Length: 217
Length: 391
Image (cartoon, rainbow over all chains, first blue to last red; front, side, top):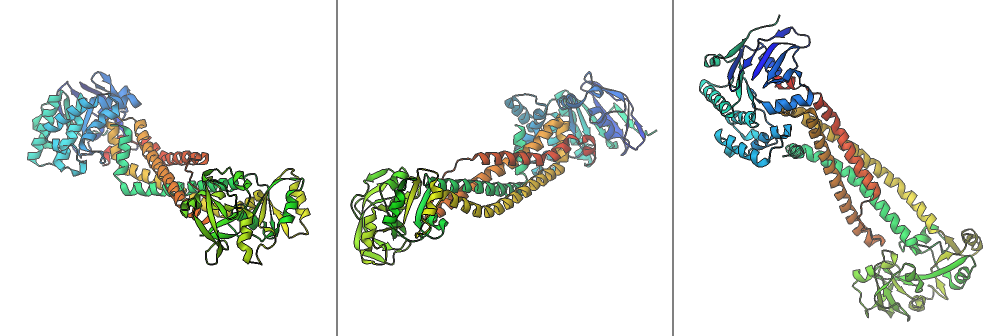
């Protein structure tokens, strides 16, 4: 599903970063582990097409993401990738269910609003958020916000879900809960899950992992 | 869900900021449009009353006063003139027609004007009930007077001396209402019309007023353009003068013009402020929502979608302000019309959208959009990766 080869990147005025290859098959789960400053987020942004690599290739679902540009790239990202950010961010003026309708609007998916409503309701129900559908994001507790952001990453049935530091601020119990939820939901959606973190607690959980070191040459 | 819905929600999420921008723009637009409207309406009204009156013949004095008194019935007359001398002027070959006016009395503040049937005919006044006066002391009442004073056919009243109050009542004769006119939107609506003899009759006991055969003024229609040049010369050695309504009103408009110009400048300043406020509002909004915008990009939103969103917010703000402004100007005009109708006998109640206002609306909306363009362009250039990492 995902394959990167020989990715390098360079921030203006900084050293060249090189990244190990990342491979993940459809429906698979992968951990990208690295300390702060090791380039985790940079790698994530490169794979998502938010950054253009200096050299190397990114392939997702048979598409050369690194060759896409402009609107085509935005659309591909919108349709195939879901991201759970470290901190849950929403469009504050919209309700939870309206926030979940955003990906469809942004990619102009053309899906009927009944279908979308149905799916939103189902997803919110599974994530125990159905009573918060019409609340504004800032009326949610931190846990609810995180579950809502998982819902948003999954609502448009992406092929890949990235989770950026989903557990760094959580205690052991919550970490377990959030990770289980992520695994379960991505499995249900048939998407592969890539967790990007420095959280060593997750290390033993995954067979497939890529460890980033200080790779600056 | 559509983009415009998000724009609206975003604006409503900051009600105070949004209200400030809208109100500022509304006041700017409102003031400019109110000025345009009232200027147009007042001009129309003045012109409607001049209608084919080329010259006004009356006693010597201020020509402007002569016009205001006899065409608009706002000011006091300049004095009286001899009927025979006036008739000489009407018979002049350069003059086609003349409508004599004689007045000096009022009923409850409305002027009783002695004239001929040609006067209401000149303003195309039609009877709504009753008939035109025929006998002495019969009056035909203008529409506004009849309504305000609740006068009906057959009612009788005493006139009062002077043009404004009822302290000196002529109780020797009473006037009888024999007809009521339909509204004409002209000065006729505010007058009580009778024949000239009635005015003389009332003043039978006032030997100093309107003695002999005197009238107040004559409204003249010229046959030959030369009349404008010839008549003043002809009247040089008499106590009479002629004045041109068009010229006097032009002069008056120019005098008023200074005031309206100052007001326009202030209104434009307020509008400029409101555009600055729209700019700041949209810009601040955009800055504080940078992360949200980056988020929308990760969901597949293209830069142009976000550009549209920001532009929509500016557009909604300016359209809201403009619409509110037009409502303000209409309300203002309505209030003004009610005030002015009582004091100056003019009825400014037409509420149509002027061509200049359409230009104003387009301009204001366009500049409003322009104010949103700088923040919108910033979203085009946004580095999503950096924005997401810096939070």
